[in-house]
Image (cartoon, rainbow, N blue to C red; front, side, top):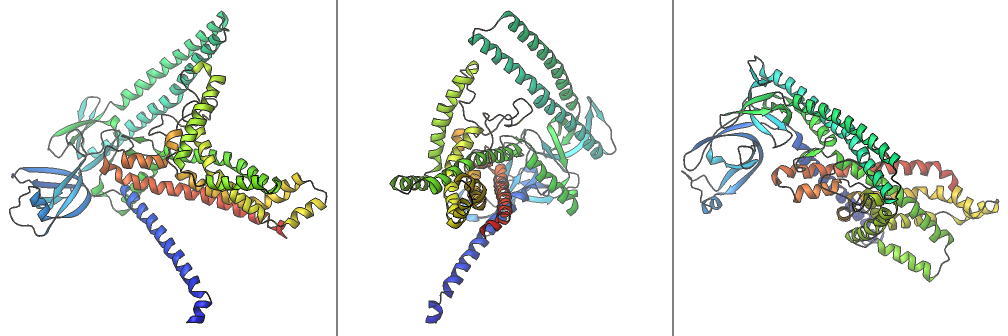
Amino acid sequence: MGKWFKSGSPWIWMTGGAVSISLIAVLGLLLLIAWRGLSYFWPAEIYQWELVDQQGVRSTLIGEIYDTEAVPTERLLSAGHQFKQHPGETVTRYLIKTGNREFVNLDFRWVLATDIVSRTAPYDVAKLERSKNGDFYGYPIAIIEDGKRLALDDVEASFEAHIERAVALSDQAVSLQKGDIGSINYQLENLRLKQRGYELDNALTDSRKQALASERERLQNEYLELEKTFFALRQAAARDAVVVRDMRGEEVVLKLDTILGVTYSNRLGIVGKLVHWFKGVGNFVSADPREANTEGGVFPAIFGTVFMVMLMAVIVTPFGVIAAVYLHEYAKKGPITKMIRIAVINLAGVPSIVYGVFGLGFFVYMLGGSLDQLFYPEALPSPTFGSPGVIWAALTLAILTLPVVIVSTEEGLSRIPSAVRQGSLALGATKAETLWRIVLPMASPAIMTGLILAVARAAGEVAPLMLVGVVKLAPTLPIDMNFPFVHLERKFMHLGFHIYDVGFQSPNVEAARPLVYATSFLLVSVIVSLNLTAIAVRNHLREKYRSLEH
């Protein structure tokens, strides 16, 4: 036994076991997040309950079972509940998602099993997904087309066809509003700024004023025509309505321009539920958020996260590599170089919120305010670059991750044998040519390793972004079809901040809980995808320049 311990084998097994346990724990956590998040899109059974409360009042409830828990009977008795007969040590209670916000105070309601008289899963009950006021549960019984109630044999087929028509018209209206109308508004604002610039320079001549007025009139005429088309589309989308019998037994008329889809969950088989699940995940990834981020999708947050990380990578890589090359290849070893290395290492331990404060003070207010004074005086006092935006967020995170890139690049440079450099110099190459053609290609896998670590940290940071650019809802993306097409001064959405906002700032906690898990899993997926891409590039570079090592 003593020889076995002295051989070091137990420590090898212990290290391997610790790594295995860590991997299992990480995979288990990811699976838990994926299960809690992705199961949200699985169509649940819709039940109808007949209830009798403590006063003997009967009521009907329609909804989905959201959660189930066992509550000690003593706790319910101490809270004032009375039971006709003792139910036992615990009582099961259900959290029911009821929707129908116009007629119910809350989307969710706790129901005790002792109050349930019956529970059924009706074949005809439907869940209507709406663009506002949440979901609606009930029985579609008729269609109102252009103010006339239709007598239809197949209400369901007609209902789905009318929904598709209304959704298509609404999508056209939104596309027109964001596209052509938004472009004209952008051009009108540029004309205003152009005229203001002429006024500041005392260069607003009569000819220029007339040209600006003519261009403004042309754009306003185009705007009026597009506005007519927009309102016509909105009016056409709102033409029809559906009559739904809700859980109160009353008929409710819902406009189809607010309905996004209908699902008869109780009719779906496994294949139908899978199709619905894939559609739900696809909509979550590709749609815009709504209802204070508690419903809809997260596409702007995905785009903002990836765009900001890529912009940060473009900024941090050259600065990190140049700094590492100077420290390792050019700087003389001495107290100053040693202090610089210590400072770089210490920068990695600075809290991220401190970087956010620095970015707000230096980049946004000082640098951005100076840019506004020099290049955008016509827009003042409204800031252009002097307010938080995606460029300042990328620069802040570039400084935050700069030590990682520097240290990793220096490690790669130190692993290159000095004989390689000496051989290149002996063959007549200059030091710059040696660095560019020999040293940096051989160190490129280490540079990519530093970039991978930088991306992994930057993509998950939230605290500094709250100060330098991220917002709850961004009206437009940083990229659009208006010149110069890439707008680095705009604010953006981020998956990490979206998780914080939905989880801690949401007015509807129960509805937001699954979205926290779904968005968390999506953020992890985005980070893993970016890292896998960088790892693939690193492996390609490693194989490409492997021959230089021999």
